[in-house]
Image 1 (cartoon, rainbow, N blue to C red):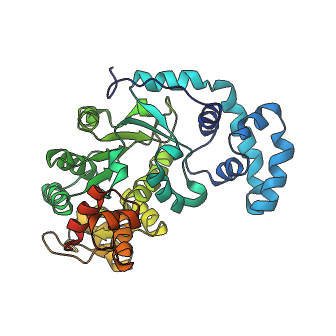
Image 2: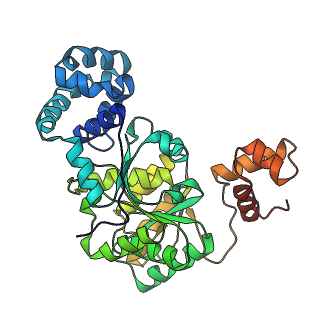
Amino acid sequence: MAGFCQPWVMQLTFEQEATIAYSALSEPGDALAYLIFEQNGPVAIEQFKSGRAKQIWPEQIHQRAPEYVASLPLLFERFSLRLPKISVPTLVERAIRWNARPVFPDQLPRLWGQFSDLEVHRPYLLWVAGSTRVFETESNAIVGTRTPTLRGINNARKLVKQLGVGVISGGATGIDYAAHRAALDFGLPTAAFMAGGIDRAYPTENWPLFHEIVRSGGALVSETVPFTAPSRFRFLNRNRLIAASADATFVIEAGYRSGSRNTANHARACGREVYALAGAWSDQASQGCNAMIKEGLAKPWQLGRQHNVEASTTQKRVLDALREGAEDFPSIARESGLSIEEVKKELFRLRLDA
C-alpha cells in the first residue's frame, strides 16, 4: 500500500544511525535502557556490540540507579536477541516506503522540552509521516472510550471547536477518531500517536483517516521502529507521549478501567492539567470520567462555558514578557523568544489587548 505523504530523502549521521539502532533494541518507556543511553549516548550501541557493555554498564547503573541493577541480565538478554535482526538501512528504507522519516530531539526542541517531563521515560526519537507543525504550537490531548455514545461523539466535536487549538490523540476508533475528525473538519492540526511501527498503523479501518490527517498537514507518529507490531504494553506506553506532548488532556466518556485513565495519570505526572466531561452516575459511558473527577485526578469541564484554564507554556512566556514591561508585539516577541505571529495568536487566546 502507498505511504502517507510525499517521500523523504535523508542522510543520517553516525549518531543518528546509532540512536535508531539503540531504540530498536529497547522497549518504549524502558527506564533502565534510557539511563544507559543517557550516560553513554549513541556509543552505547558499539559498547554492546563489542561486549564491553557487560563491564561498563553495571558499574554505571550501580552508581546512578542501583535499584535497576537486578534488571540488567534481562536487558542484556533482550538486547542479544534483537541485535542480529537490526538493520538501520532496512528500517529507514521501510520508513521511506511509507513516506515517513526519523525525527530527532534537536529537530523538535519544543516537543522534547515537553518530553523532558517524562524524565527517564523519554523517547529516543520519533518516526513521523506528515508535518510536525502541531507540535510547534498549543495543542490538547483528547481521549476516551472506543465505544462512545452518539452524545460522546457530538461532545468531542463541540470540545474541539470550543478549544480551537491542535488536537493530539491515539488514532483509535471512538473518541480518538471523533477528535481527529473534528480537527480536520475545523481546519486544526492534529497528530495521531501509534502503538506500533509507522508501517503498522492501527486500527486498519482508520487508514483513510490517517491518510487524510497527513494530507491535511497533520502527523502520524510512532516511537517504535518500523516492523514493530502494536501490543497492549505498547498502547499503554504510547499514552505517556500523548499526555506529555499536549498542554492539557481532556477525557470524553471512559469506562472505569479505561486506558484514558492511564493517559490522565501520565498527564498529571507531567504536570499537565486534566479535564473530564461528567455524566450521570447511572451512565456506563461516564463512569470513568465521574470517578476521575471525584478522585481529584481530573477537573470537571462543561461544554460552552468559559473556564479558567491554566495558561499554556507559550502563554506563560507571553505573560512573563508583559510583566517585564514589554508593551508591543516586537518587544513581547524579543522577551518571550516567540515570533510576532505567535505572540498575536497567544494574546488573542488570552483575550488581552496588545
